[in-house]
Length: 148
Image (cartoon, rainbow, N blue to C red; front, side, top):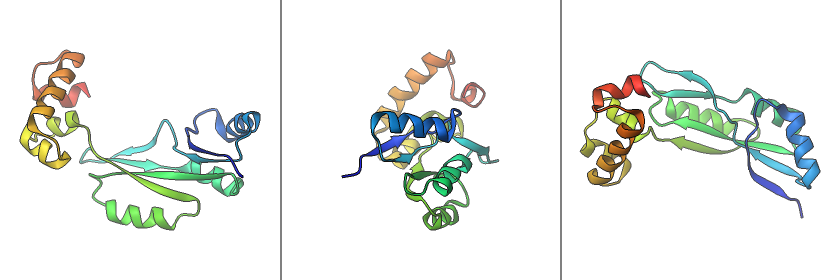
């Protein structure tokens, strides 16, 4: 039976270092969750991820690697990106990321709007934002975009 690592964070150490670590502990294959994520920030605040290292690993070692594609739910091309990712060789799954509560508040959404979008209560949003404000040493939603 093959031993598969369900989540490898392929990083700056590179593909060979990842293979070396896998071989050292007897792992036959891995699903890559590229970390730290790379990509670009779009005008609307969404993040468009790139998978160059993951795709390179799959091309060079197709029997050992597959990867998970991240999609920001706010990306205006979300549906097209999902369709493209599904057709990529080696793309095993999709991870559709929701913006954080703090990002949504910084974008001007009310606690109620955030709660409805995330299927949680407004009180949960309020508690989370209170904690975020304290950690960031801010006291208003208007300060969030600069602090994030």
